[in-house]
Length: 205
Image 1 (spheres, rainbow, N blue to C red):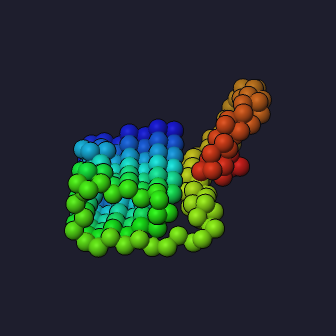
Image 2: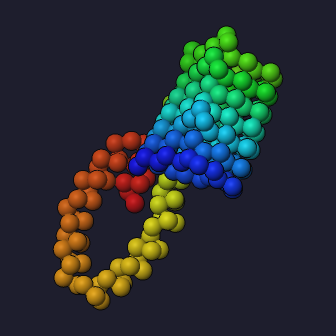
Image 3: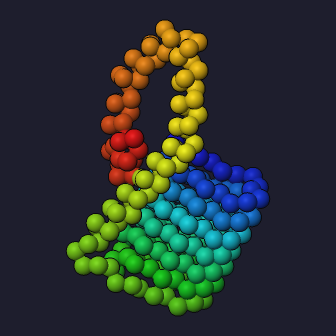
């Protein structure tokens, strides 16, 4: 649901969830996908950041490149390389410092770059496919949903199945009651998750 990632990480970070906040010092790359993805001001990512979500916000430091996709992308931190953005809305704040270039595929009226932002490289506006902008964004969010499903499957399903076999032999009566509870509550939870595009693949799982 909600993840707060802090401290010191000597390798890379890969995270998916409803809301992700990173304040950590990361020695390599960060790959983050979720409803809300935030690289907060204390965070320092030593290499590249790959970010996707409904709202993506970068206020910390990324010493390499950033590739971001989402409904709204907000850049207000320090970037040592280039930035590539595909989004419905792009906002570059007054504290943004981008050592490389900024390349974005965003509707023209949905781009705001604060005059105080410092961008050393070239600013390139790529054309948004006419009539496909919304569907293009929905496709990105759908892809993020399947990434989230993949994380859940890899992390939980093998252990879950192994535990089921063991518990059925030891506590068959309790297992039946738990199964009845799942029949009642899981469809309700699935309907709640299915409200969002990102959550729809997870709801189907």
